[in-house]
Amino acid sequence: MTDFAGQVAYYACHQVYLSRRAFYIVVIDMSKNLDEECRLYDTDRHDPTGSLFHSWTYGEYFHFWLQTINTYCNDGITQKDPKDTTAIKDSMPNVNLQPVILIASHKDQLQVGTCNTSETFYSQLDACLSKEQTLKQLIIPYRYFEVECPPGALTQKQQMTIDRVKKSIVETVQNLPHWGEEVPLKWFELEKSLSKRKANGEKVLKWLELKEAAKSFSIDEDDFNDVLRFLHEIGKILYFSVDKLKNTIIIDVQWFVNAFKYIITDEKHFAREDNINVLVNTGKITGQYIQEIWKDIESHRDEPCADTNLSVETDRHHDSLCQSYLNHKDEILQYMDKLGLMTRIEGHLCADNEEIYYIPSMNRTDFSIENKDEIRGKQKSAMMVYFFKSYLPHFFFFRLVVKCLKKWKVCDENSFFKNATLYKAEEAGHYFAIAVSKTSIQLQIFTRDEKVKMDEKCVKKIRQTVEDFIQEITETFHRGIIYDIGFSCSDIKITDEDEDFFLKGTDIKQEIGNSNEITCPKHFRGNYKHKIDAGKIRVCLLERKSTSFSSDN
Image (cartoon, rainbow, N blue to C red; front, side, top):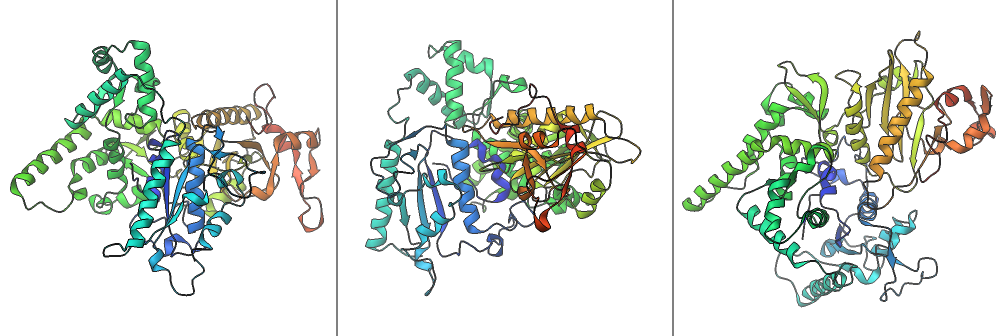
């Protein structure tokens, strides 16, 4: 069982835990109104204030968690659930293989007169998913339980509810598709040996070292690669057979996640350096500062132990833990880079020539109106929009930002925002912004000098590379992320919501022909009628052999 933190700062590392070889328990406080904004009641120091999740309601978070499970864990296979007796069988005959046990907690704290009653709360949750039919397959009435959380002992009735939850867990696990799947005994023996090594304090192993250890269990090289993939998928290890990572295996996953946790939850962010306030609020941090945090994990420890002998042992463990992070700093940062958690900003050093790293999920700086106006007032391309039809994973944008930092340099040190990043193109005088709205990834190329005209080859090259990155990230999900490629029909500002202005690329390409200006095919009546600069869109168009505009691209 894994209970991972629900604060927004942790969302980027949830990908480490989420697996299709699992079931999920989603807990929601039924004493809260689903339409209320969570931040109004969240006094935790990692509250969502200033983040992309700033104004989210409890209902939106519920939708978010189910969509997260559906996206990261579903391999697209469904099967009939014999216990499903709901009345919507004809329209939705199957259930997802990633079942969810839904727990409505704090039933004992319901206020008199509240609308959240036993009869209505499930239907309210169901209504949160009205726009996404596939999510309704994840929740089923017989896997829904309302529990009470009294300060004292449970009553017999309360205990009976808990017993029903336990029974549901057992039944749910036994109905998972991989239940009863045969796994070679030698794989299990290797897993046990890794658990022992982890218990002895080992955190990271080299591929060759573990390969040699596997031979003692009669695991050859072909089987070894299979068992590594299997152990990675069930969350026992972290391993990617690409680039520099293929030679390193992290055998203590929680230790790795904690390395990230210590950085984003450090209580001394605003006490260590005079300029750390600026750094942290923009998601930037120095390599030296990372080491200082790992050296000072003391601030994350529990209360001192009264047992002297145990306290000495705890101190020894603490020192060993600090040293393990310092010893494996390079491997940790490489894995964080791969997962889009953090990356080094190439070509940027702080005043004392320290390397600077960027953590997108920590950025709380909004892309200001002044920044938007600066781009809008310059030479610029049409705004290219990647519209995610059902769900835009929120750290998809973070991973794209990290990916692009490998290819391009940022405009300057003030190019990082929670919802946009500004890059410098290889062609002189050309820059571009990658941004995120509620439903879309946006791309717009611009110049800072009015005398510099838009270079068509530059625009197409940037677009092609960004789309290659988007497709590459998409393929890392268990379930395909569907999106349409197109343009904003209106000259809106970058980061603005674009859903009402999205035109699919295939449709607009047929409309513009050789014209310089056309009436918008989406808004051609009444007060909404407006013109489209067809020339700007034509500059952005790619040949079909390079990029398809289809929704499954």
